[in-house]
Amino acid sequence: SSAASDVYKRQTKARSPLGAVVSRIKLSSKAYSSLPGVDDGEYLIIQFQTDFKNKKNVTETLTLSKTEETWLPIGYFIR
Image (tube, rainbow, N blue to C red):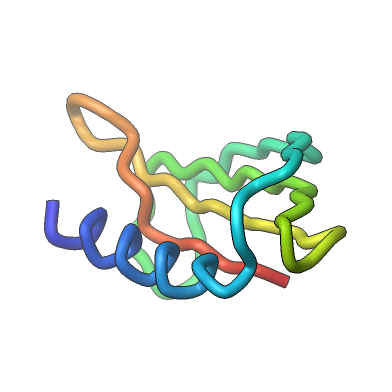
């Protein structure tokens, strides 16, 4: 999917200066049937606490959208 490919490119660009992942712990996972700015559907937002080589204590947020066959990434944010 083009959207999944775009998310992967943004994720790679955002994470590359941070270095390799040292540790990652899942903080939360929550399902939604609607989110702002997108059609109603099945969505999952997962948050991780991640330590990268060059930056510690980062919150990664991954948004997934359910298609007929699989979950596709539609958003990735680092805080």
